[in-house]
Length: 402
Image (cartoon, rainbow, N blue to C red; front, top):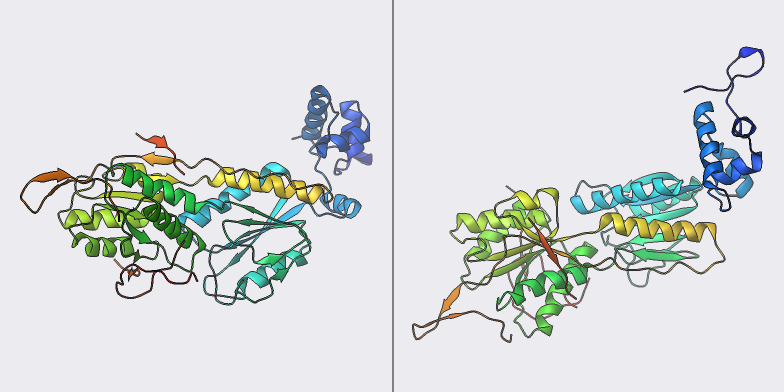
């Protein structure tokens, strides 16, 4: 890359006037190009960008911040975890922010630290960010609890997949809809003819786990199916394996909706070891569509999460709010609810009647065992609740949502 040369032949950082001179335009036009302003022809924009590339010109963001009162940076508060869902959403946010031309500042919180969110937000505000994205999927004790004053923030905030824990001039939400996705998974199994669907839930401190449980239960109730005891895991394949050993002992279990793919994969392993074939004896649906889901045996039917679509739309709305503080917020739209149907689901096995005859199970009318940590697709779409307890099983009924 060739850089501009100052007086006396010494190297100097190129300025916007150098770009303007080389491109044959005014400095104002250079500014308009780099600020993505309208009314600049494609040819002029190309010439300016090529001149900037040739000279090695970079905008002085500090000077722009002083002139505009904005740092052109967005802060992200996210849980420090390698779990597929939160990590994939953060990657989607990073890609979306890059497309906006803003800088990204990320602060991780740790599970089990109720003060982590407040400290992360304060850190980002100290850095002068223009807006904040909150991707905090856990309901930490004392955070956002009823009766507690929310954190006060003086910049626009985008909250992903959870209730807002902050008070701000504008709070936008995106990624809410795990209950609808859970409804799609549950309805798929009922439509295949299963009498009911068991649920392997995620840890109930996670908003997403509670939403998925609520969508599952609501669908069963609406369809007149019985609501079985819930089994709670911890998102790991090991907890799914232990849950599978429990569920395999119940011959009435013909369909299971797992709250994530890792638990579904562990569940399938345990069912297979117990002699319960998937999907001939038990159908299994997961959630997330992790990259390996299509390659396990059998390939897993699951609910893909549209991480990039959620991040892109959310960041577009947040940047609009930052740059147009007096304008109405851009409207939101929910991405379609899809189901990746693979080979882990099928109609239920034939059942033997008390008289010795056989019939095929079909939908008719119609909370909690806990497990903790240890050892070609076709898409279709479709259209609350207590958390499970942490110990042994309990029947039906409802309890307050945490």
